[in-house]
Image (cartoon, rainbow, N blue to C red; front, side, top):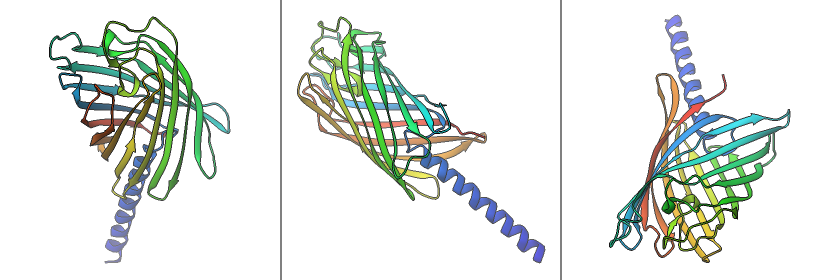
Length: 277
């Protein structure tokens, strides 16, 4: 009887440690500066775009790779590679219907390993004119500063990420009335002068479920226009073949948008995790 009790206690303890480890791993995903390799694949569907009220499907491939610079500093590389399918936005012609790559946004964050009381990082952000269709990008190089600050308080994570991008070269567009700029912004002006602000708050349960609310807001200084989507998302950490994977989904509503911008949308996808050890 005593042996059975010891065995049961051991199994229960191992189960609790396993659940705690999963919850900690899930919460690391709420930290943009976590020193862990990950590969989010994020699908975004937006509706009500352009005079035709069309839709756009944007699949963001977003590898996150940390580099150890010294005993005290890390460099976190965050890349956003968008694959865009845009249809039905122009009721008279199909000239804005397009499928292909959008412009890549590459960010680097220099972050201290043991910051107190807040986790923070700063660095440059680069816009690369990689769009394969003129309606899917600005055809300009862009450059600017970026930064993030956050705090983890028990199961809560809250903070803000921000950047600003100015165009620094490239011919730009002049053949379309509107096109897609970084962060999914629909612009009526070919200049790139964008401020991006992303306040966020997340709550992670002991079952490795995370509830997140954020706003990926952009101010276009060229058109004096805000784009303010409010995102609500739920994610769950699971094991597939023993490997940790986060599966997520959610909805968003545009509290403010450009004249040809979307009304609402949805988000879904998964994140592959490659924790150390």
